[in-house]
Each structure stands twice: as C-alpha cells, then as structure tokens.
Image (cartoon, rainbow, N blue to C red; front, side):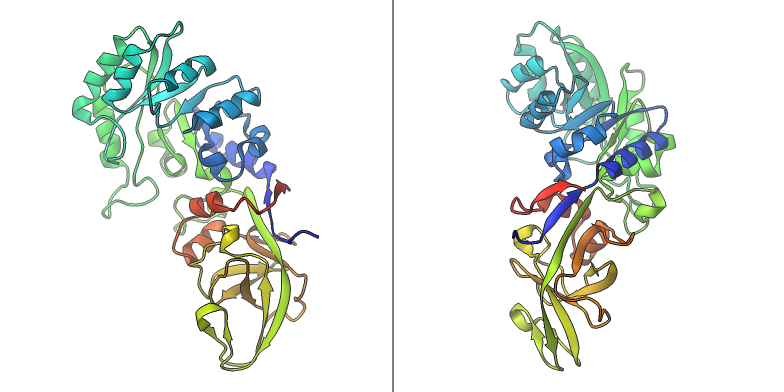
Length: 366
C-alpha cells in the first residue's frame, strides 16, 4: 500500500471563502488570486470552486494558459506584468490583462504590434517599495500609456505592506492609502488596491472596483494571531494528514530524534508519523508544535526528520499504530488545526506551508 500521507483539497471551503470575500466587499468585483499554482492547492483542482470569481490573478504565463485550457473566458490579470517583450504576444493571443510597473514595460508596449489594444493596470509604489511607479512619476507613466494605440483601458492599482497590522503603532494603511489617493486624483480608471488583509480589515476604505482575494481564499488568516479563522469565518481549503506508523515507550532521560533535541522527563509514550520535511512539513517546527491525533490536540517532539516526526501520545491511551494524524486542516469528528498555528510554531507563515507541500505527497479532493 502507499505511504499514508496525503493532502486533501476542500472545494466547498474555497467556494465559502470566495463568498466571504464578496460579503466583505459587496460592491466590488473579486480577483481570485491563484499564483504559485493556487498557493500550492493546484489551479485545476481549485478552478470549479473558484469559477464564480470575476477574474483570476496570477504571475506566470504558463498558469494563464492552464486557465484558458480550462475554458475560462473571463479576465486574467498578470500581477507583475510581462517579463520580456515577446510575452506581449501571448497576452494578445490569450487576451490577458497585465500590470505595468516600470518604464521598460511601457517601452515594450510601444513597440508591440497588435490588432487589439491591451487592458493594463498601472501600479503605484505607494510605500511597499517593491514594484510600481513612485507618486512623482505616476502621472507621467499614465500619460505615456494613455497616448499609446496599443493600450485600451488603464486601471490603477497598488499593494499594501501593512494591511494586516499596525505600522509603527499606527493605522497600517493610512500612509499608502493617502499616497494612492493623491497620486490617482483626477485620473480615470478602475481601482484595485485591496489584498486579503485589506478586504477583511479595511473594506470600507479599500474595496474599490476590484479586490484581490489571495490567502483568504485558502483559509489562511493574514492577521493571525490577532484574529483566528473563526473570527473571519474562513475555512481551511487544505488538510495535510498521515498516520502513526510506530510507537515507542520512553523512560526518563530517553531522547527523541536527531541531535537528541527532546529528552523525556519521565515515562511517556510517543508515536512516529509518516511525515517529514521532504513532504513539506517545516523542519524548524520544534517540540510543542500543535498536531491532532484522532482529532485530539497534542504536540510534536524533537526534530523533524526527512520522512518522519514524533508526537506525544502520553495523554491519548486510545491512540497508537494506525491512528490518523492531522498536520493541519480538518481533522476527524469536526476537529480543526489552523495552518497558521503550525506556521507560527515553526517561525514561518501559512502561505509558505501551503506552497511547500512536496510533489511526492498525493493530493486529492476531499
């Protein structure tokens, strides 16, 4: 039989979370962000559950082609735009919308031969300082695009750095929202400024024409641990689960795993789970990382190995060989372990865990 680890994708959770984005921003259209292969969930596996979105946003031309192959005829937005001039040919053929964040991309558009002008999203660097035109250069960039016959409608966008929390003890979006409002004042075009965090926390100020629902679609909480999935009514779209494949009885002083990172203080029973860092479970998840065994919360012990990790069964006498282990997501008997809890214990974020599930882990619909 195959090794017992598997990842389950929950289409009903994806559809529910998309509906939550709509409820937060009822007057806006919703981009379903499916970059990084739908945050590791698989574009093809998520498509039917997310096709009620108004458009899909992503990074890679390959992913855009996959969506068109699924017979998606609606908008597709390239969030980072094109990476070289010839990418514009595919944009023309697939009718892709694309961000414009630098002068080089405008230069490429000016040289592009197309029968149908492009829909573009002009990006403002409002303070994130990754991509986008500075406020001082924004209007000139708009004027250049507006003068090109290769360009049809121009929309305006920016991205918040601190929508999930306070910034230096103050409102996390105020400085960027002010920069965007001033730079875009009097310029025609639809607006898209809200990511998941802004959609959940600041919809009344940021839900313009389009919101970009990313991590929230997959049940991740952008402002965890301040808020829980239950607070925002989000459901996990992925479960990573396995089984206990062995048990050990320890005595005081016995150690567990490489480096003897955990030592028993007294008699205890442990279970060995078929899951390790080669499956995408975080190697730096140390002793105490939460895990569910048969739906009951317990903890990991010692270092995570390539293919195995250890869990504490001392308080679970009915659990043992063959018991179901929920690494994150939906467990048995209506139990649940938020991915963000596991990520926090490992010193990372839920986004990374979703995207890091290894190819060797079988994935199927729940």
